[in-house]
Image (tube, rainbow, N blue to C red; front, side, top):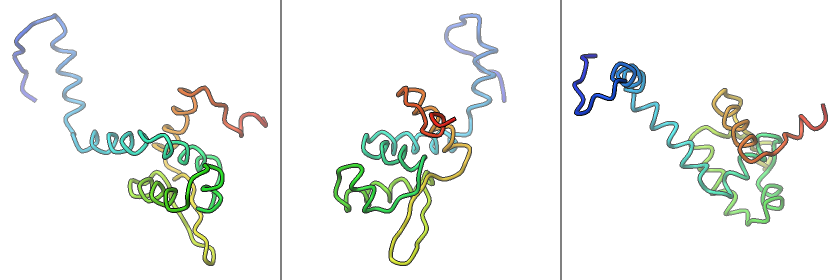
Amino acid sequence: MEPKTLPHNHGNISKSEQIIARITNTENFQTVAEYFKQLSDGNRLRIFLLLCHCEECVINISALMNMSSPAVSHHLKQLKAIGLIISHREGKEMYYKASDTPEVQLLHKAIEKMMQITCPDEINE
């Protein structure tokens, strides 16, 4: 990458250039922005956090969240579309849980840390 001449020299141009060289792939930023966009809805965030800890069907999620099944299904569709959750069918029931990816695990831990929530797995240890 060719060095840029910036309008103001604050003495940190080389550091700025190093950062820019690392963040030129805008596709990666779009993916991360989409994760945050989907998690910006409070109900969707609660559903995601629940599914980080257990696998549940729509009916149970609806009861736990005090929401209608269609509303829960809408949120699940959004979370599944970007890969934050996965599903599988058993008979007539669809079961959902958080994807087992490093990105999802990082989001899970970050949300719990920011909200000062203790993971149920950590309580039992």
